[in-house]
Length: 483
Figure 1 (cartoon, rainbow, N blue to C red):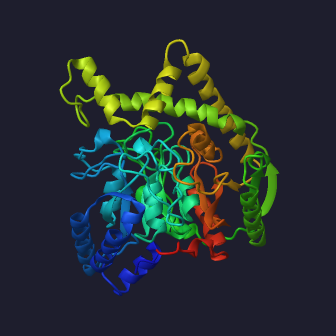
Figure 2 (cartoon, rainbow, N blue to C red):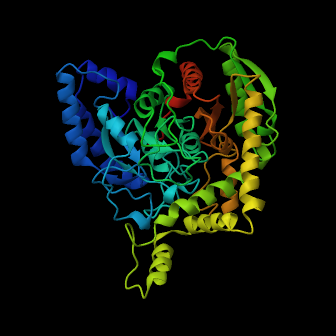
């Protein structure tokens, strides 16, 4: 049962081959057996899962149907879940139980999805390796000595190891797509505003976006269908009709114009990954796509712009964690200043403190114009590059990451080296565009992903291309040894 995709689970439940309760018990036992190797979960919600599974079976018995009705999933541990610990991978929120459900959690629960637990993540979503979590690093199931990517590495590792068929993640600069690439999954970052951020604890509010992680594009379509939609509680949510993502999966790629930016194939890209990307291009050409070289001239400025804007927003968003209202509080503070300083110093890890300080510096009176304002201007130039490119092509294709998964601890002493792993993904967040990573092969036994970007609200086009590619390749069907 653990090898079934979401789509296969939906068919199995509809045909009464098994019940949601049976499936849930199998997967909970599998998590208990295998997750100690991976550390992909922070909290397991066995009682809630079994209650939801029984309710889903009862709804099916009464004639209800739905692709997510009775399907087991997990949530990245920054989606608020009522009465359940929502830690953000941080000591700061280790004792926080959310008093309400995030919109994404509520929508998926209403659709009948079964929540198995909350997955491990980089602290407050800050990281590219899932090593900054207060609960310890997550291991990559393809090689337990390597990172799974971050910050949604717990979700990615759990799905890749077949502990469950799909999970939610969030993407601020590639945090869905990068771990998807490093663990052989399909991961989708929707258009900014497509999925509600209400109840999703913020890292950088103008960049964060929730999305699905699964083994196939078909499964991502099913999960996105349940997540997407306008939410009046979220001022950045966009009131745009949600199409039937599954209905567009089987469209022909004949005549599809695919742009390949020349800037993607620079000295920083592992040549073995470049070869796999070119193989993917050839496969799509066989399906009728037309390839065109394009240019994104301001891509070189993306990392410095992102690492000013994101920490600036983080320093503002994380100012609420002060030891007064909720979260971690230091013991025996001498006065209010001591309470603030020690609560934040003891509650936040090194990476979070680093980004808060960078952000506070960039926003300070003497440097706002020199750093933050200039970064926002670069952000507009990057968006303009994409808009110009999409006048010529339908989607943009390239590598998801410049390298395969690195060894645990390899980049801990050099944060900038880890930041550079986001070079291909962060432009989509700066511009607010939808992006998808899909499996494209292996280098030294480690997975590699190919990234697709599309114009605003064209998630269906990304899923269509990925699905057609997956019908003609088998990379996404490979399973890590031992899982």
